[in-house]
Length: 204
Image (cartoon, rainbow, N blue to C red; front, side):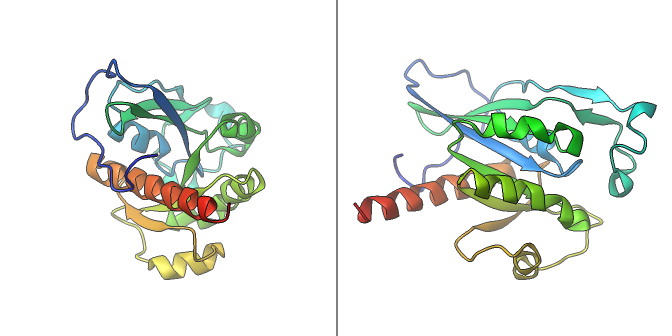
């Protein structure tokens, strides 16, 4: 996988002709937690997204109490790309957050190297399904707490306890709107995957 301290590029560039390895990463979490925003902020390319305007048909189906100003929703997935180095590329897939689209998640997890669980502390219960499905698929993941301006400032230790996360699962604060913050989340995931690979090699 290369150095665990690989840095992500700071600008949007075309895919290098020497790129040989594509690594699939999935961003999951509850409805309106910021998955589309995270993919959009870090992608080197103009992200593909399937956002649609929310209509009256979603009333009573999609729970948006904590994100009442949200007017669009992802109905399939978001897709972006970011290069780790000249030969390695991350392909980012943002999963839809509403319960009625959860059936798509198992398909998205197929072939996934690792995942980011994006958490909104105003609605932490929405994170349970994502964590459960990733554990079911034995997909390594990190948890990123998207800090909203009006969010209650729970500590990472408090959030870890609330989510019953094991100590080996990395947790980081982030701002999904910030490219640098999104890069830091992905670097945390890459480092975690690197550490798991080293640990696995040591047992062989």
